[in-house]
Image (cartoon, rainbow, N blue to C red):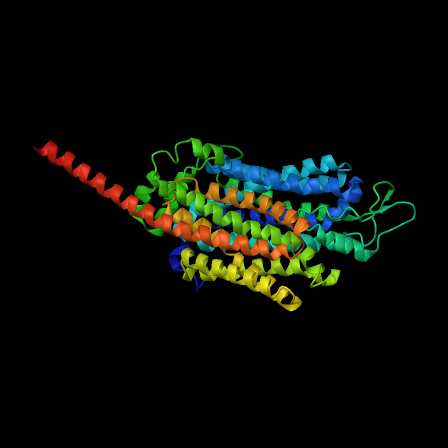
Length: 505
């Protein structure tokens, strides 16, 4: 591990089981991110529902992912509570994968996806929060690795599903069948929250169901099963389950141990005052985390959330609608060629996060965010200007994935760092990212439906500009907040000095 500081490597070795467990639960999160799009037509056949009805499954998953992110902080009061929530969430994902083939009504499928979305949101908040608390100022490199496993899971799940997808109509009615080309086209079009321009495709809702997609879900359930087992193993190691279990390690104690591993006595001494006491998003705003704080403190939470709102919104919208953009004029790519774009995008995100692991050791998060934000906005402008070039669409898609991959983990580490690990930064940022992914997909889908495919890149440019503006405003807000904090420390020091002098006199 030459690229890593010996101190950081020593810290990792002392917490390796916790770190690997949090990374593995994010692989489970990644499995759920990308499986729905490729399998949605087979699930439509299984539930014998219309395309308009099956689209509610997308919304159900996104809505409850947002809710799960909002309440995830409620489970972070102790290590036992956090690990219990992670174990239950990852186990629920395996159970959902296993029961999806048994859902023969669209309402049952929507409920199953809502449960999966809730589990995903809880995983998203807790895993990020745990790593930030465990490594604090050294968390960037570990957050990059954490988010690499999301991309890895998102790459794996479509590969598992692909051999079991129907190439022709999976509900046979009146002896007719859709061609395999039409099925591929519709499957890629439904890669995100779809628009309403699919009603002219003649899919039957009554007839014989012919689909093998059940095997894909059962395979994913088995692949995911070792992850909750790993979480239970960590809980057993920490003596949280089994004989003699009791209240043992609270998060604050692990923070102090991590500080000692850093050799930072001063930081360990101040840890009780500065330790992050996260709650759910709504209780976060009520519990006094913001009361009495300068406006710069609140502004950092809001602006940091906006940066991830737009960056994660771009990821969700691009993944969901780049295929629809590519097959429409003026590019008019073939269905098979356009189908590779989503894979190229996720490959860029995964490769970017893998490359960012060593880079995070050499560069500060603020510098990485600046580079990624400039890269995202330049790439979006190039994609807009070269809208008629099919070759550059692939190059730009890969570049966009590489640049935007580092925004999420770096923003988490940077915002928590400048707030000195106080407040609700991780909860607010993770929830904002989930909200952006849900709302901006809906917005882009509606705009493309009414204005045409060209508006897809226009929306991307607008969102990237708003993201950069939010980041610049965040930097300005941080300067104001640091000035306010310095003045506050000076005033308290003077007050203490005057009190001491008064006692002496």
